[in-house]
Length: 219
Image (cartoon, rainbow, N blue to C red; front, side, top):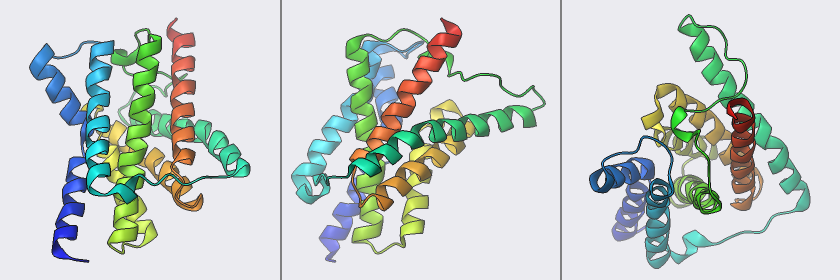
């Protein structure tokens, strides 16, 4: 691999490492912070995924290659959605128990996300889901494994940790829970022949289940 290509790869990895932090900083600079989820906030959240993805496509067109998948693998992706949600719930429940509180009963989410979502909000969240999977599976996992020769297990672990750190604003427990779900998404990506559709389905369906359960609890 030539030195310019190596530098370009690491520049792309740096640009895709912490989109949530960039989005919030940009929103706070222009809007003064967010107390609850809103359409403008979700627009800012989705913006870096679109902008950086276009930049990646312009510099490394092969990074946007979308591979097909099969019906059985799509079924697996669907079945893994509640598994990923359960893993995240278990990590948060154990952290709550370790702090001396009672075990969590029922699924909940941060108060910030408990507001209602419009159809436009749902579309923007869908962009974020696809963007996260492209950044952390296609770009991070794919680049480390394919371009730099990292062992699949190590590339999976590193990309999942970076994905977890993207949720640092929600606290260290969220970093741990998202790292765990990142391992599920990344493992599915590798086992499915590096088809991005599989983790997108699992991730998106997990969010749908989470929002539905939360609405039923707080509605």
